[in-house]
Length: 112
Image (cartoon, rainbow, N blue to C red):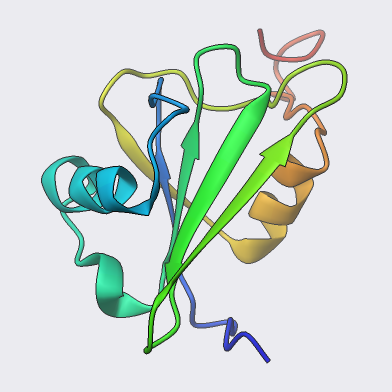
């Protein structure tokens, strides 16, 4: 139905994004910071300062979808490097959206 396939890329805008932004503002960040055309059909993921709300921007060929998720408790284990851009797989995005913390096998505990 949505057209998200295994070829769909996931771009993460690391750090803080103003949670009040709608699709126009997020589209502008996608062009300026991520430097990818937002109309490619890929997913663009943004997170607020408290890391308890995440937004995903996606173009389906006819218009933009803007999905939002808010954690009731806790926060997303979202990359915090300011103005950095990262990529992840759809499976990793699924894990991130579930609120699972990523761990480094060399560390003794979850990344903070």
